[in-house]
Every structure is written in structure tokens, then in C-alpha cells.
Image (tube, rainbow, N blue to C red; front, side, top):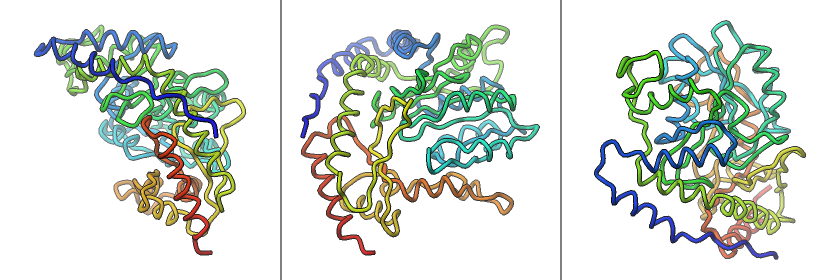
Length: 370
């Protein structure tokens, strides 16, 4: 079997962090952050990038920047983690959960259209597992309904579709750099946008409104501490330089593991759309075995990390804080999560680790009771 490309050297990571630490303490320090933002905008073909402390903060700041507030509604896929919906609630708005199509993993635009009201302000497509929905369909839907698009591209750095990079198809694209992402800094996130006013709002929002956007005064409104710490910015900037190699390695890891699982009982790889350049964030397989969620949980118990088995990922509309008697469950999203084995990788996973995962999965699938 073809070997993986080498793990990109990590020597420069420590050097850059030490350089950032050498300038501390510096309460106003932002030199590494500024350089990282400049490099991000170039790398992702965006006019502006704003670094923040997490992917959740990226969404919180971007949704605030487009004016989401009390009384508003925001369309959110049920096929997502709770961190997508939390910023909507924090802003006083209500997340309205939309179903997804099990055949494509894309938003069900018919369901979305049925849930639009006069209070609906925005839609937040989520590129879960790095997979990206149809940009043209999303833009047409949003335009027809008068909605602003804010992307949750937390896992989708490096994915594109029809030549459009994830995070650049709406008013803002929000990314996470939590440890485990392909582009990582331990903790952190960033917002991409071509809108100068939106970027200025995010910059103010991440720092207690101390540096306000035009037309506003310092600390004129409540905002938060969502800054990216300088040592983490230094780490992120270095990883951004390594990003092409990290992306190549993740794609090779996923391809390697899926090849190793060819012929495994009851498992079929999920393929990207023909016009999609997927970052291969997580190897994805459709589980055709009985009690598929229990199978994913068994794999987690056997040391094979995956979304549903390890993190108990469920459709977001079924979380206790969002359930109510007047909503119809998003059954497509639940079906996708129940029947998808989304394996969790890191850049350090070499052939031995992937071979072990494949052996465990193949053995457990063969022994799984009918």
C-alpha cells in the first residue's frame, strides 16, 4: 500500500512560540496576530481575516456583526454540534433547526424554506467533517429569502466546491483552530470576510469594543474578550505555512484508511460530490450493519475514535435545551449521524496507527451480530 507523505517538521513551531514569548508581557501585543491575519487573507483568497480565541467566538462575533439579536431567528442545520447553535442563543436569538438530505449531507432547502418567517435573519450552513454543500443552491436560497449567510467552516479549511473555498461563499466564514483541526493552534479561530464593516465589528467585538468600528465610540456597547493570544498566533502562523503539507497528509491518511477498509463487512465509503474538492477531514463510511450507532460506540470502546461513538454526536435539535413539543424532528440529520462512521484523525497518525484502526474495524464488523 502507498506510504503516507512525511509528517511536516515541527521544529519551527517551538521557535515561533519562543519568539512570541520573548516579547511578553506586553498587554497591547498583537504583532504575531496581525501577521497571521495578513497571511490568512492571502492563503484563503479573502480580503480580510480576523483572528479570535475559538471557532465559537468566530461565529458569535460574525453573527453579531450582521445584526443578529433578541427576537431574531437563525436557520441552523440539525446536522451539527451544539457549538454552532450556542452563539445564536447568546445573542438572544433563536436557532431554528433545518434537516439535511441523507443522500448528499446537504441542507434540505425545502425544509429550510418552510421554516423561514418574518423574523428569520440569517442561515448558518455547517461544513461538517469538511464536506461542503452546493454553493449555488445555498446562494440562490439565501437571496430568494433575503437571508445573510454566515458559514460554520470549522472543519473545512482546504475544502472547496465549484472553485469556491469553504468560508468564502457568504458574508463571513468562521473557522476553528482547536487541536485536531488540520490548521491548528491548540485553541483559536478566525473569521474571513470581504466586508470591511463586518471585519471592523468583529475586531471590536473580540476586544471589549476598545477599538470601535467607524461611527461608534470605545466601549460603547458590551462585547467580549475573544482575542487570540500571541503565542497561539505564532503557532497558527507557523502551521499556516505548513498547511499545504498538512492538508496533503490528511488527504493521504484518509485515502490510506479507506483503502485498508475495502471489503469490510457492512461499511461503504462516502464519496464527495463530483465538483467538490474535499479536505478529507474525517474518513467517512456509511454503516449498513444492524444497530449502527451501537457499532460506532463499540469501536470507540476498542480505541478507534469517531464522532458518534466517542463524542456521542446527535442531531442538535434533540439536545435537551432545544427540544419542545411543537417541533418536528429532523429525521434526515438523525439518520445521517446514526449511520455514518466519521473517524477522527490527527497529523501524527502514521501507517501503524491506521493499520491498527482498520484491523479493529474489520474484525468488529465481521463479528457484529445480525
